[in-house]
Image (cartoon, rainbow, N blue to C red; front, side, top):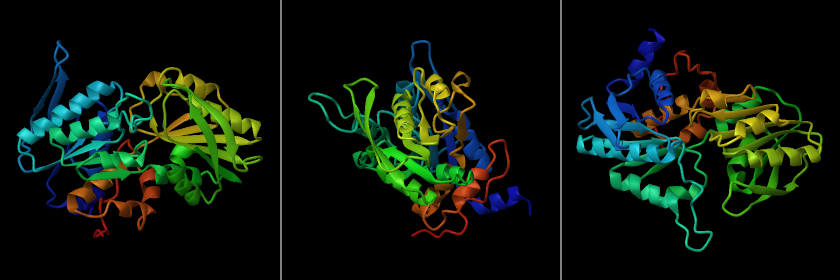
Length: 352
């Protein structure tokens, strides 16, 4: 039996469809390639008056539908595409609609930390729910409490296992994991997987601008190889400040990784000019050709999201991807987005 036949047998009579907007169609195609299914057909485009139009070409009645749409640049257009697609599927009588949002925009606006400011992350959650989504699948939210903004089930995946597996294969001697307080919980998991100590960077944000000030490095980093871990890299200003602070503390080599490569402004130029040996990110956000650099390596989330989609559809445990089947991360890392077959999704897990 060929690998394609094995995967088709694993899916069997499953009736679910995967669709995409315009935010990251390449990721959606890779997810479908891993699952060995066709990407659902839909028209999603903008009229001359900037109104967005959606038409579902395939029959969606009573289907389990997964919409791949990170709310990345252009952020507001991506959000509107997602909302309109959800509404279109609701009116097409889809059985269940899962919004797959690998990158959740406005995630930083998750609290009222100043007078008279909005909590936009909650507003987006309300909009997705009202539009008609039945559940949300996302990756590494800026803060975990954003899950509580939704009145529908939320499955939050993490890229920590994929990223740590990449660095484990390097067999770095004397490593130390470095992060800030906001990502400390997930970075602790990263450090445990690396069997390395954890150091914390104390920083503060200056006003409402994309600027931070690194105040202190808490932990022993001298003479070690540092891996800086975070959920996203926007302008790379904070990352470079951390790199400079680690240099002053006597770190011998520096690497970095993050789930979301926002790369605003001169981020790539800053990274290229820094002392970093390598920056590892995922394809939750598409990186345009002009923002690619030899220092930046991209790992695909397609296998992770595809496995989660199958488990959600079958009512199996998504959390088992990060517990009883941790070895799956290494298999996912070896998957080739160029077309090498993925493993039969969902095998060996009956759920919890």
